Amino acid sequence: MRILMAGAGATGGYFGARLAQAGQDVTFLVRERRYQQLQASGLVLQTPQGTETLKPQLAQANTLTGQYDLIIVTVKSFALDQVMEDIAPAVGPETLIMPILNGLRHIATLQQRFGEDRVIGGLCKINATLGDNGEVIQMTPLHQLYYGALDGNNDARLQRVDAALRDCQVDTRFSDNIMDELWEKWLLLSTLGAVCCLARGNTQQILTSRGGEALLQGVFSEILSVITAEGYQTRPAATARILELLSDPATPMTSSMYRDLTQGFDIEADQVIGDLLLRAKRHSLATPLLNAVDVNLQVYLQQR
Picture 1 (cartoon, rainbow, N blue to C red):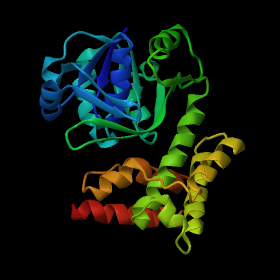
Picture 2: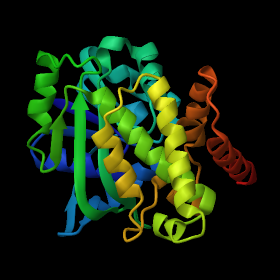
Picture 3: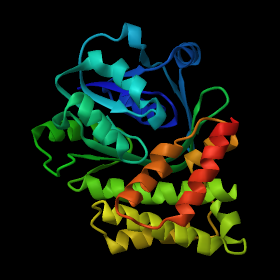
């Protein structure tokens, strides 16, 4: 299977490297700066087990040739419009596109551009970031990759994707209910991002602060009400596990949005929080805490 990994940041770099190491034909589509960095130093993985370096196959938008069987999109959501332009020449009649982005807005955007039958569901769970020299730093052993047809019909095309991904040295989950997995990932990451960005700290600091637990539970409840109104078929055991994970004061957690914010980078405010508010408005739901978070993030973006 010919695979194009659109992006070689922490997510794309890690999972693309594991696919390449498993013998898959993987090309990384990257920008000029990342291209030069990877050409010079290789793709470096720093994991709890040690450091690994591989020489990746690289392409830029102006050098991309041929069509691919699977395109995995791993960029930040605010870069999606440009990436769609970049990958368009690589999309053929049988190409499947698997986005691993935060939120859900990107699914409709990709379907409108490339067709509903080309886009499949995907998400990952990994604690990783890029180091100062562009190395991919995996902070914990967690490395899960979920994928499946958005309508639950995992036909022969999806079976082929599973055959390529399942032996790539990561914990793969071929899901027949990927939409619920996506809703639950959004519930987790948006709650985490909201409370960390609003309070400017990790969950341990928040939960040990006066009113911190109530803040986290209140944000969680607002988000759960929104996604349920939007079609999420609540799985009580799953949502209880998410709240329990977030509410553990012994485990300090932060979101990628919070880490980007503290470094002065652009953030996925509209895609993670703003889209929830639009959906809440559609159902006349009161979300005062999410509104406070959204204002906070908008002010940050104005001040960058």
